[in-house]
Length: 104
Image 1 (cartoon, rainbow, N blue to C red):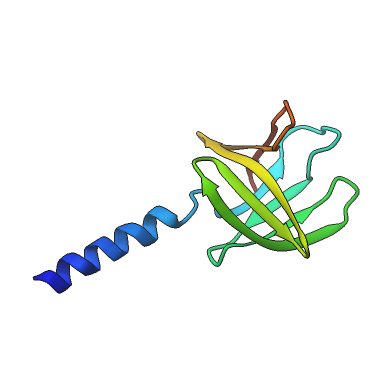
Image 2: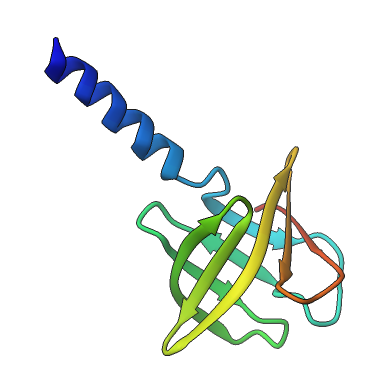
C-alpha cells in the first residue's frame, strides 16, 4: 500500500511540474519587440523565432507561479508566462506590456 501511495504522490508531482503551455505558439498581432513564434517541449526545452526571423533555442525553468527563466547559451532571461483560456500571455520581466500568442 505504501508503494502505491508513493507512486501516486510521484505522479502528482510530475504532473504538477509540467507546463500547460507545451506546444507551438504564434504571435496574434504584429507587435514590435515580441517574439514571432514560441515552442515549448516536455523536456524543458524551447525554441523561438525572433521578430527578425532569427531562431534561438534553449531550456526553460519554472521559478514560481507564472515566472520562468529562459536560458539561451550563457544568458538567463526572466519571463512571466500565463495561459489565459486559449491564449498565451508573455512578457519579459520589467516590461509593462504582454505579447499575446495562440496555438499554431
